[in-house]
Image (tube, rainbow, N blue to C red; front, side):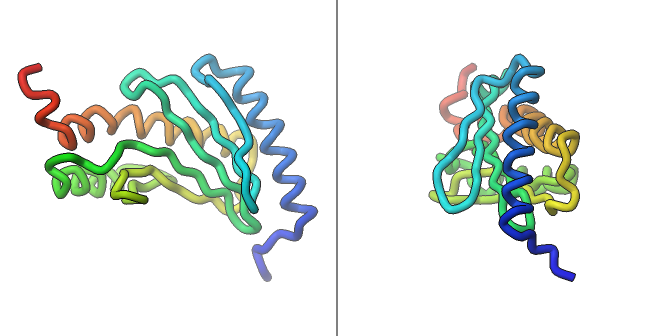
Length: 154
């Protein structure tokens, strides 16, 4: 049996995600914006105010089999790159449903994927909340290590 969803099923997920994200924004004071992206696959971004990182944006992309999500954590390290990537990899062991990855221009991202069979409003809420929390928890240490000379003497 294939886990490939037909266009009608994907369209139904798309409508549900629109509704769920609208409810998420209405109930969550840290949400600054929710918008749709352009492209071949339905894509949304959820921009939230952070405490450790000024803004955290979680991109959510709907495919025929999975819901992919990612957040930009920080640009390529100016120094201590090996230590930064090692710290992120070691954090991966404790993360549920997401992992650190090196993306374009060696920037650090937090990414994950969920089968559509498991997608529900509570699960989407958990995914966005988890990614937000993971970025908030990890960002200060990664930032200080990646740009250590900028924090010298502080």
